[in-house]
Image 1 (cartoon, rainbow over the protein chains, first blue to last red):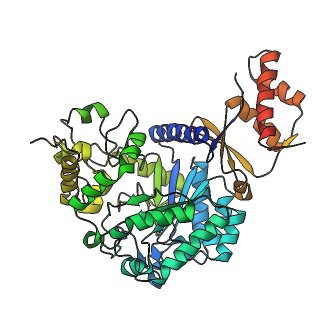
Image 2 (image 1 turned 90 degrees about the vertical axis):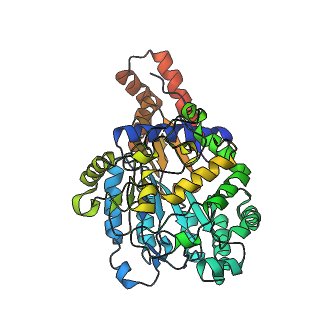
Image 3 (image 1 turned 45 degrees about the horizontal axis):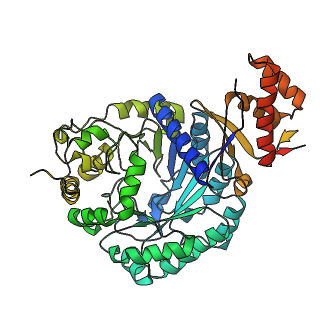
Length: 388
Length: 89
């Protein structure tokens, strides 16, 4: 027996952060092996007050037909309680814009006391003094705010509302003043890529960190969204250049890849030694992340999916109960086929392909996606190691 | 002595963790990873409270361990909780 001192882990000094990653990685590995739903997302709504055409989920904020199909607060809480019993620990609240729901705090308050580590994704434009006061008292473990530009003009171009810029900035300032651990991200499209340096300046000003995570690999619409991310996203060549230019990216890749995985942040499927040799690579394996095996995504309409990018397979935790729905989903996930055509591809080590992305791009788990294929080829070439 | 209110001990896969609830996240944003025997002590301290003697007796009843080792480990555990200001008298 060794009782010893407990380990305080989480935000704070470097040792605590290391312990956090060490412990949570171990938990994720075990959960994925044993099919424990450790990590969950509640997509509380698909509706959003902004009108970003590069979003893959968005529905109209005032659409009553969509609002009436969303799960009620009671249903969200009931399914969350059941997920907790099955081992869920990390819970993300997202949308759409979750604060658009008038009953958001009817959901948030009980969730904050259930025993989850809560993360909130928000655009911060609806985060007024009232919301900040609640978060000051009962903060999420972390709030992640996505910024869409560094000026009102860019917000007008991307989100259809120039005034959203000042509201987002004010919302972030309220979160920080409330003592909420706040991270900033940016989703980059051809409408705001020119703002990247200014966004980094803004991040430094708002949260004291110049490095902000960016999402540049935009996903086509899923779950019935009628936005136009394909039209708004950067070309594969432009994305490849951005990857190459992003000095932080390499460090993040190396950190996240560790000793086992390959050089791209986007693929977790390839052992490092195989990648180093440049292949040959087998066909794309079935699900190689935690999706549907150690994590779940419950969409706004109550369907439980393996991940954000998918439309199916899905199960119905509200109708059938979380535990049966989870067991069914893990079985369905195990039957997701790999992409045979990816076998032998010389660019695999540089590819962002995964079953979810293939389904979002093509509607199929097994068809190759031209955008993804070209991006892999461009990234490989930019890395200076392309063959022939 | 007793653990302050607002924490939940959970066993997730093979790991025992203590999670802050609601208002507790303000002054404790992270989690506490405890050993299995630490979880035993935490459970006692959180539910009804316990004296050092009671905690030691529980350890000795639950594990094949000598008094000296159990006492040393328990004190290390309790000292950490004291330092983190998680205990009330």
